[in-house]
Image (cartoon, rainbow, N blue to C red):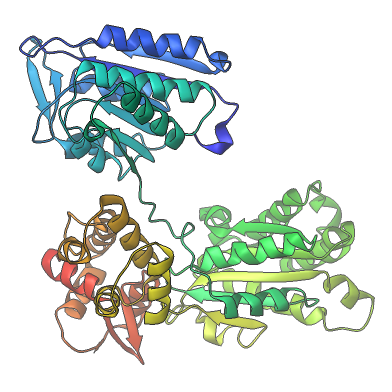
Length: 526
């Protein structure tokens, strides 16, 4: 169970399907056992069980949307080729392929946390569904009713004891062992491989220590820049956590939420929202009417920080601003906002009462790499201000270290092969190692399927492919990049967007695919 949900209501949707032309199952007994285990638990008030018998494929999504379950439990038949057996309108068997159910669950991934497939050969389905759902349980072999019921007993007994999904799976497996069944019948727990940029961060001790030392300096400013999925946000959070450990006050703002259509055309609306957001995170009331006058919007914002926000706190304030590249793209805001931040940084250098106030503020600015843009960050008011970190890809030695941390035993040649495919891309390396461990495959097997829709990067590659296909100019340019053996020069803004997406690596003003994985996949699909 998600740790944040320890005291929340837990809703379970129990689905069964026994087509007329298939053998009968003891699904009613399985349901009674589940009900008994939950009712006997000390946490029984937290559980709500809803069931639907004779489920048809079209019933699943409707039941999930109506009941909003965290857990979906299917009890029924499965085919050796991976399909699950549902019923059609006549009560006869209708086979549903793994990718169809996976697509269904992708649409309810914000609702469902765990899927339990108590059916024969359902691990094939579980693998597909686990691309979208955090925890999915399936079986690799044919199982009988007694095995299915034994696992359900252990699983829901553990949930009733407030255990996690992993621990519940373990207890279910223990029940199967205690009943004397073959270990080969034990269900497999599949966990979603999270490809988000916030999850992965490989420690870079030199960079981290430099940031920790710098953030303690009065009025400091740290700027972290890199393409997407390189670990910028995670580094920012580590600096913020370090600051919290020193009892600094911290505020983290994501400009993906702060920048909207109104703000992009109105600097006053943007800056007022910015002031209110920072104050709100500090637990301070909105006092804009008192401090906002007829002066410039930048002066008003500076005044609000200097005379209200910074004087209302006792400890240093670390203000972490994420996705600031979204500000750089707003012509009505960009230069003035950056100039304001530089002024704040410079104010802290003053040896007077004003300087003492601004010394309390420490800034962290995080943005995707800017190479060409309407505001080129390299020529902006923030140029050469504070500590600038351009996060690089991982070196081969760092990839080797991460492989070892992941518990994989690769030779130097294998490390080179992995590095050659991924070029040290942090997220791709992490996902690859997770995938190899999760599916217990060899590196040659992984390398063979990695650039295909069968491999670990399917969702990431499809997402990037859709972005390119939706923008013809980007698609045409990247087609040239992946189909040319040497770096090529592209139009300036095209280069900038491809770099921000992490799809190209620059050599001067020339672009080439960031890694061989991208070259191979996009040659095939563009």
